[in-house]
Each structure stands twice: as structure tokens, then as C-alpha cells.
Amino acid sequence: ENLKAFLVSPSVTRHEQEENKPLFSGFWMHSPHWKENKKYPDDFYYLGGGSGYTLGRSALQQFVEKAIPICRPNKEAPQEDLLVSWCFKDILNVSGFDTRDASGAHRYHQLPVDRYMLFPHKKKFGISTFLFKSAMEFMQKEHGFPLLWGSDYLSNSSISFHMLKSPFDLKRYEVLLYGDGEAQKACNYFQP
Image (cartoon, rainbow, N blue to C red; front, side):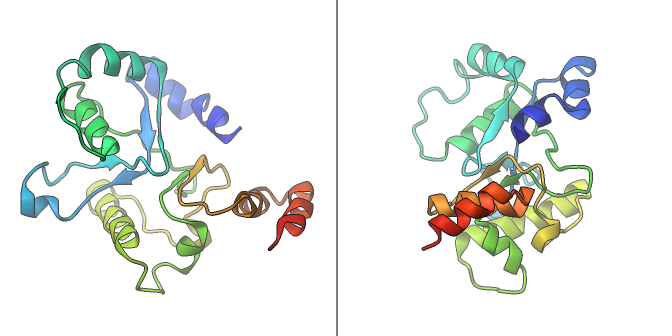
């Protein structure tokens, strides 16, 4: 339901209809290693595939008809999120749409919620947390996004979560986001 509400929101409607731009949205990722290997421009960011990305109808049509036939058609690699984002930018001149809510909280989540709650106080989480931190710092520096941590980071209208380990996690997230009594009962039932 959060995705549906996001897609009919005034900002998305304005973006697609009034500004006539294709919708390509998700969590903006950036790697500091690009400066070393020069595969992509320093200011390039991609939409992380772990939490998913959302394409509007126009974006999907343009991607299939214009980008796929000419954007690295023989490239085989596991990083489809990076390749799709590059094709949108390089061929279609389309960048990611800002999916944060009115308070600046994020709707697409690359890490489990417990990491957001502890971040940045707990320093050692591995490469995924390093990439998340790099992405957040890039968004602040290049686009003026505020650095939000803990519960300020998570939108009540979240759309997608990556790295969930059990059905219990989904129920817990529902309780955290909506405070739903029925979900709370299920949470207690599924608790290990």
C-alpha cells in the first residue's frame, strides 16, 4: 500500500505528468572506489537492487525500447542494479527520483532495520554498512540530503526492505511502522 500511495503522490504525479520525466526510483548508492578504477564518473550514483527500484510505465517502455538494445547488450555481470542505472543515465539521461518522505526519511532500505537503529554508533558491520555510509555521505555532499540515523532514517511510508531473515522480521517491521494491534498479536505468535 505504501508503494501505491507513493506512485500517486503529488511529487511523483508532477514529475511524470507535468515535467514529463520517466520515474526511476529507489535508494541512491555510491561507491568511493569509483575514483580508483574510473569505470564511472565520480558523481554517478545507482539505485540499489537489494531494496529494489521502481520504474514508472514510461521509464519501463523507454528502457526496453531505447536502452536495452544499445546499452552494453553483451555485458554479463551480477550487478544488474549498477548496469540498469548506468543505462538510464547514459542512454536515457534519467537519474534517480528522490524517494524520501516529507521529513527526509527514506523509503527504500538496503540494510536490516536493526543496523539503522545502531548506526553510526556501532562501527563494524562489514562492507554493506560501509557502502551505505558512503552513499549517505555522498547524498549529503552532492545533493544536500541531511544525514539521518536511527528511527529518523526510517519512513513510516517505507516501501522496501532488504536482508530480511524471517517472516517474524516482516511482522516486526509492520508493528514498528504502523503500530498495528493485529500485527502485534502475530508478532507475539511468531516470536522465536
